[in-house]
Length: 274
Image (tube, rainbow, N blue to C red; front, top):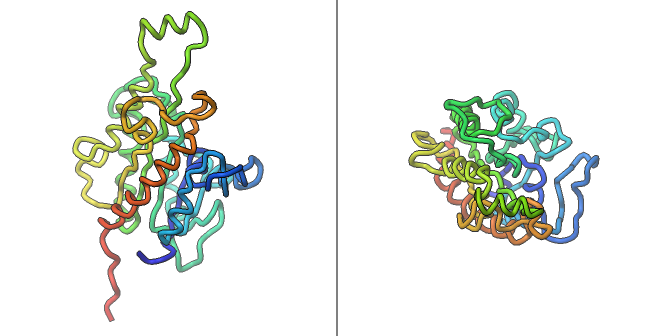
């Protein structure tokens, strides 16, 4: 692979931890101008270092930047419609890459509150609605494909949103309710949507003929490869949905070969004839 392949990762806290080296927290403080962009973190997955070793220049967008503030599912259509050219030229936060460079890869990820589903909703859904239904989420991602199709030389990598930590009953009433009514259904809707997003046969990319859009199943990895609809790698004794160092490192090690395979399926850049 050629060196210094520019990769833009649009994220908030979970993405920042995934990219960070493991260790005590360095960077990422609120008000710093680089909120959630960490050099190191106790939950650090080390993905930035792994990618740099493979020749990638990792550029980040997060909180406290003009283009990085909004990363919920309903924000992607407007972000990619109105700001694509800026995104392709973005270095870290609101800085720009040198004039002769651009991001060949754009990775984008919503955070775990985007798995707080309230129901299936009604098709075809509203891509810009903040109401988290399966139909609205499908509409949001479907609205992106015509945009991405205009940029066949750019690889777009959608991350499924990380799962929630399983709610824990806090009293006898809640325990009885959980026994008789079962688990909350929001996690079931989250599984339904994320399964659709990655399913190439009947899901999001069904019928999409280009190779420039892929889905990395962060959600499935963190649910123990599908053994649960809840996070198997929560923090703070299972109360915090931010993935643990073990979950982030597992995902980071999976992402590097995943990205290499996706890049290998992209068309080779055309050489100018002399």
